[in-house]
Length: 309
Image (tube, rainbow, N blue to C red; front, side, top):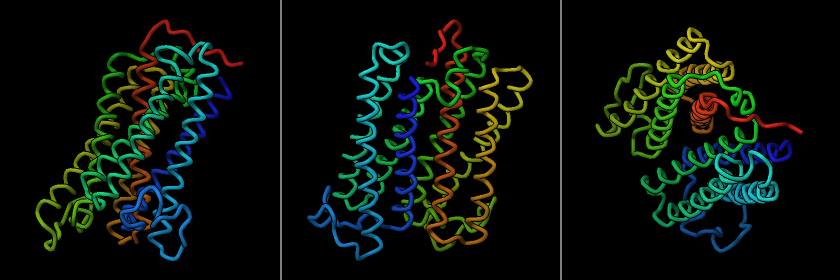
């Protein structure tokens, strides 16, 4: 199980790197760096790296290929160990790994559709949402393999209240991240608010762009307040330590995101540094999903723990 867990961690790392690089593609406007050509870039697998937008886009595609390969390796490793407890069957690593591979292939297909439709917002948003689902599935695979506190969660100690509260938090985090992706692509939404935390609407953008930006902000603020409530409630009810620790991490990332957002707007950060905001948002989604999954595992009594070799 240890080697399988390491393989899942490696695939997860590649997925996170690919997500961050995808954010750079969107923020820098490099989505059409290879024109409408896919999977090759202007008919070549290795085109001349003579333009910044082409370099960003083509390396994003290379990372996607590495990600698919890492997911296939994870599935193969889980398949070889499918007879082990916690690997095959319901709730095992194999099913999560197979789902992750399917989502990875779906993300690649949506990437092609995005290119063919000229980087249209609806296609980009669908691509981004599938990518969020992929990284969450890898988190589930790691927890099933005993990582991210998965072994500790199987000892129990979480209530059904914690389970419901964490699911609500993960749902809000997903909505906030998806709206963040829409904010990055909707014309004018990224610069619709000139102030922070209040909006200070930009008079040069359309009203719809302001609404998109505000929806994203409201979701982010409500999420952090919800996480504050979870941390306080978990301490009062003495929930499982692994759940309390995960909630504290998610809250810390939420506060960090507020600081990054304020700096991004107040200091007028350049596009490359703005990718830090999206990377932090993805981290919050990962943390809240892991929190919800750990609470789910810890609220099921009597589940056998994974025995490490």
